[in-house]
Length: 334
Ligand SMILES: [Mg+2]
Image 1 (cartoon, rainbow, N blue to C red):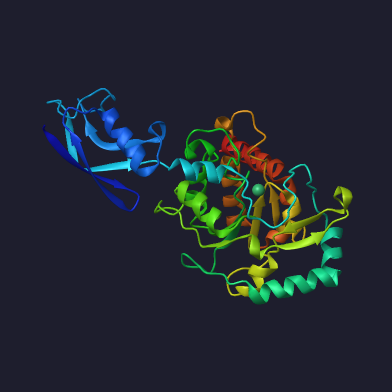
Image 2 (spheres, rainbow, N blue to C red; image 1 turned 90 degrees about the horizontal axis):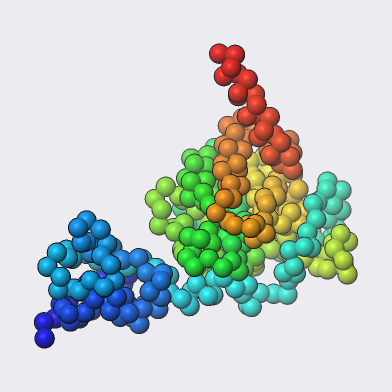
């Protein structure tokens, strides 16, 4: 029987597949599911054309009008990875997963924790042991954005069928626009392997316009006891002091902003925290525009604010509205 050999690029692999010419595109997809673990419904194949379009699944490989490129590419995420990254990992230290346990830290909280010798001791230890490895160049004269993942840019536990549906709308647009003004640190309360998998699947490493500068994981967080939470729950926080102590030539309280869906995460540095609406509590994620607003805000403050601690990020949306109104007024006067 007539056979055809197809060479398919999938992530960094090259897969050679022998198919009968009488087989259909659907048969090829079945074979690819078997070999890569990417379900047929998640497969995007580039390299076949019939009248200028991707052919239907029923088209045979022997079809005389079918154009098969020498370079075929499969885009998709293996099901195992999709399942894994949608779950709250079980390899975490004991934490409160309940998102309801959140509180907005005040300056008083900040002071209390900074006077707490246990907290200071933990902080000192972390500063000694944490190793920050840049994955792209750190720049002087830019600001620093510390960005959370779960419920901030990723719909953890969401029911989307593709990673794109679980990614907060406008994420790439947002990161691309702020990249000239900010170095970007991704800091998530999970382990390195989950952070890497999520960033990889959201294409944050492959987009040439986006440069993630460094990554911090749960091992850089410290546990504190807060009297805001019921039952004296301990919870983890992301102390920006670690970054400032390790990289003082680049980053300081004046130029750092930490965006998170949980404000308790920035209890040690409330002046540098911006709480964003959680990306899991929304009805349909598709009309979510938080990152569009955030783009405008971060761009504005990077250009016009010398010291971020003098701002009140708590009111960031009201501020944005007032700038918008001022701009409309100015345009009308011109
Ligand atoms: Mg989060």
